[in-house]
Amino acid sequence: MIETQIPMLEQALEQALSVWKVENKPQLISITEKMDAIDPFIFFDRGTKWKGKRIFWSSSQESFFLVGVGEAISIDSNNQDFLQTEEQWKSLLKEASIYNAFQVPGTGPVAFGGGSFDPDKKSTKLWKEFKETQFRIPSYLLTITNGETYVTFNAMVASDEDTVSIRQDMLLAKQYLLAEQKGLPAGPSIVQKEEIASDQWKELVEKATNEIKSGQAKKIVLAREMRVDFEEDASLSSILYQLHESQTNSFIFAFENERDCFLGASPERLVRLQDNELLSTCLAGTAPRGVTREEDEKIGAALLADEKNREEHDFVVQMIRNAVEACCEQVHVPSDPVLYPLRNLQHLYTPVQAVLKKGYSILDVVQRLHPTPALGGLPREESMMFIREFEQLDRGWYGAPIGWMDAYQNGEFAVAIRSALLQGKSASLFAGCGVVKDSEPEAEYQETMIKFTPMLSVLGGS
Ligand SMILES: C=C(O[C@H]1C=CC=C(C(=O)O)[C@@H]1O)C(=O)O
Ligand SMILES: [Mg+2]
Image 1 (cartoon, rainbow, N blue to C red):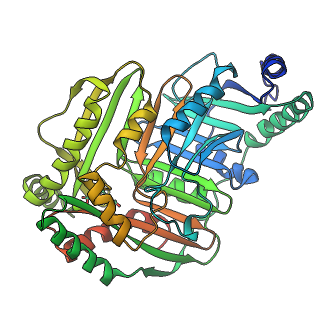
Image 2 (cartoon, helix red, strand yellow; image 1 turned 180 degrees about the vertical axis):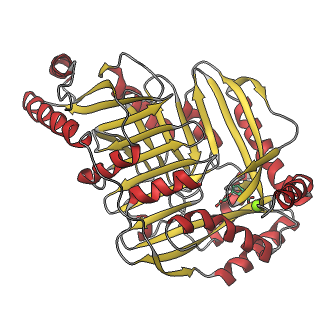
């Protein structure tokens, strides 16, 4: 039997109404409850009732989950500016009626979202459902952290009448979302796949290396697309479950907008902030995994010693270090990278730790870091101009920051790679690589091939 009362609801509604009467603008109410264990994938699947408005985030390393259904309010913008988002987020929280006795990171009002890779590139209809910047405060948010489970109920109050429907919706939603449920639906299976213009892409890699050799840039990251079709509409909950099971050391994310959903399993953290402690990671330079342990170690050692990959990696470290130093103190960066193993490939990895200076927020850092040379290039402007002009792909949200922030200055953003845009019976997959002076088109092509593998395999078409 589920306890269907929502404690503090009446107080929260009353408080919001009294502020609304003075301020005359909608007020956020947010109530957090601790619950017995809830399966995050089943919660997401249950959320199909709110189809088009679900979000998912998990850090598989830490068993941390955020699953949101419905939308209490969104903070959107058609010109990308994370600082503007920050202003709106602060103003929303200023007078909000927040009842969260726990204040654990990721509980209470949480804004989840991201934006497009390059707002200056002309967008195509592929990404028509996605805004330049879009953050969602879910109506119902499940948070699982340190083995504890919380649910936060959020709503906007803008009139006396609202309180009646909010009360009703919240109680029904609580009953529905927490009801027992059988397993997840079956995963998709790919019936057709098409690599978009791969020969042209290899020519573009060559063009970029020439550009680099002539001194126009040091590194340019180039990406490409694969389009796949399924027998039936793909079930998102099963895909997320499979990603979570197969991709350790990754962030699993999903942002659903109507019939489209952008999801992935990214190993690349852009920034994490907790109690003012900042962690960013430089991840660039790639090699496959070996079949035997011996072979794997040999490939790893070769990657660590490979000049081309070290250069690719070092450009990212330089840029992130500079950006972090501008808003942090006690910046710590190891002098050499280590290996970061994933199921299908391994990367060079350098963590950057620091303490954020007073007056800065996680979105300040996101704004400064994006795009890092792991997705754009170096120098930033020159590489971005090259991508904007020559890359035959609408990256949309691929390669851009995606993540969450709470009301207590905690949050985490990943770089949205190893990802796909699901659109009912079809999907677009994205993969890119860092091109430097010693890049070879065929080798870079093969590298994108392995980067497609994690997503392809959970979509039923390895
Ligand atoms: C651009 C992607 O990967 C980046 C992140 C890690 C390693 C990379 C590389 O070695 O090229 C890329 O910079 C992608 O997966 O689509
Ligand atoms: Mg590479």
